[in-house]
Image (cartoon, rainbow, N blue to C red; front, top):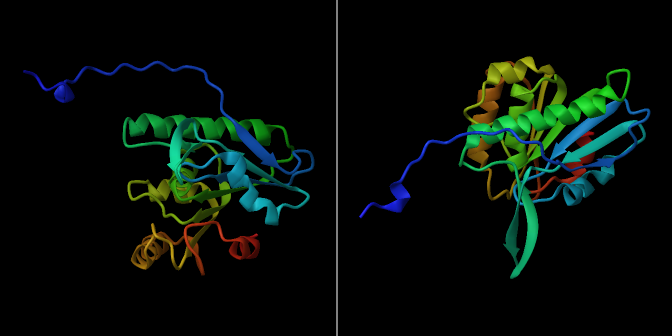
Length: 220
């Protein structure tokens, strides 16, 4: 008998319109700076945006897009809804989809705010990889890339990423008790990025896998 798990059929693709959700902290009118902040695996954009309330100010628009794939997640015996940027299944198509999505969001926000505001990108955990890929493969140059509890994916085109960083500014912020990013990974990332003459700032804070409030305020 044929093992159904081994059956393989050719894949076909169809592009379809769909709705994407994002949340804003601050006012579009008069904004001279836009932060695009990308949540981590299983989070929702609305709750993730609350972490950035301490750095809200007039003239700074903070935008939290929500990943396109939602699912139920078990937490403490209860089910809740969260979102994910991608999985290993059909990963190249998912990366292409979210890069197009974030470009379209930037088109809408930046096109409505003359003159061109400063653009900064923050990514947390899975969102750090998403942020890195968007900076590398998207259409927009950004002033600074901030990675919280995450690093640049190993398969990314670093030269292309650097070309989209106006001043080559990358911040890697990791807690000393982060269960997903080790001290060795941070050391390796420092060596890898400094080798490209990037303006790298590594911030270690006391804590775990979070966007740390005091570090965020210092960065802002």
